[in-house]
Length: 128
Image (cartoon, rainbow, N blue to C red; front, side, top):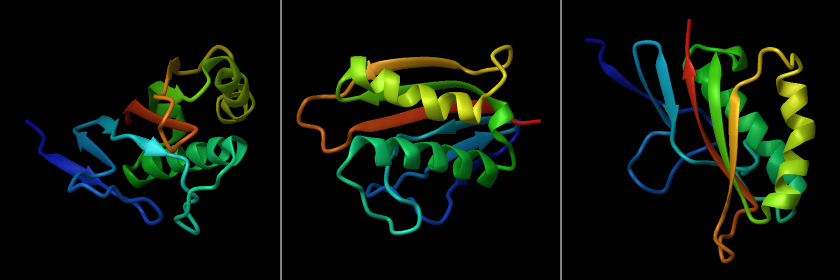
């Protein structure tokens, strides 16, 4: 059996003692990823900037684990307003996954009203 490996990358860190993602063999599971700016490590106040950052963080995560966005099989998003959030996700989604015949599964859920984030996600990838 393959040994579990914690995956971390510069520009993102959890407050709790957990890794940003974990990999066993070719399976990668992320922890919750937010829309923090990976360069400044700050959370922008607007939803559009958080969405842009979350897609950057997804790419940084899968690449830190040795994969590419083509290895992602499912992404779960949590957004403050699912009706608006889905629309905000669609542009960056089709940029990251332009081939309609080869996109990961996606599920969008509602964040709690008092959550400081506009968007968070987690994902699963099978690398190689």
